[in-house]
Length: 344
Ligand code: ATP
Ligand code: MG
Ligand code: FE
Image (tube, rainbow, N blue to C red; front, side, top):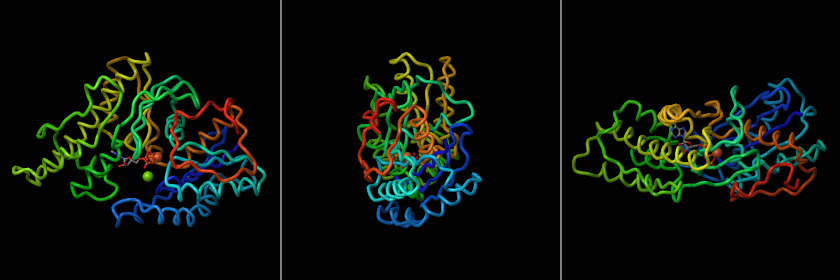
């Protein structure tokens, strides 16, 4: 079964084709980074308009790259939430119309389920059950995952998400947009240890996170009397280490709590090299293992949506032909049910 995946929840237009027999056949991505850079963040209306412009072209391109015709597609999976309402509506409308015109099922997919299952697309996929650390621009969550649609929330950020903390801190350090990767690149040139930054909620006794105070701590450093711009890379390294140490400690605590040794990391911050090295070392010491998505599939993409849809279809979820276009800009992941139990 060949599933077309469409992702338009934020500032990336992602389209892909996943074949339940042959795997990922093709995927194309258009990032709107240049479009929003001048504004220092995503402008929702501009995002929606650009998705409308790009989506038809990308759909043609993935079909061409897969060596298929549009008539070979058996089902469409699209991100129905969470995300920006206008941006989600573009993907949902195109997906539902395409499915209606072709008489094939359309499946609304949860964006975070896409992120969470994306490591299963790698060459050496993890087996269920595992603990998932979801670290993206909008979410920081630890989940116990027993199977597709079987998610229990173990802990989450009470304020900023990890990616958001990277982005906001990068902004106050005067780095460009999007800040996360730039802050990480700067940190690689610096040496940690010069600044004593807090490790928020490290000893809170639960699996929750807080990152907004770290950003303030960085602000206090750069506004201090002893601040020198030459320390910038060192400060970036100390900020990154503070985030990474808390993420690592809580991931280990989560694994201990549920008695598992497999950790799956998903979402954009999962591309961070310091995080990967720290988690790999910590899990190796405990005889466990960490799984990541392929680097190109860490941030938003159509492949993870096509894959999540394909997993649900393969497990017996039917999808619907000619349903109403419904999106859920706010949608807790734990509300999902396994495919065979959920209504189409
Ligand atoms: P969500 O999935 O929660 O709706 P999102 O889709 O915006 O949010 P992703 O696309 O998964 O999030 O990830 C983007 C985030 O990842 C941004 O905050 C970005 O700064 C961060 N990020 C990407 N690469 C790195 C890196 N190397 N180090 C740290 N952060 C990074
Ligand atoms: Mg994005
Ligand atoms: Fe995302």
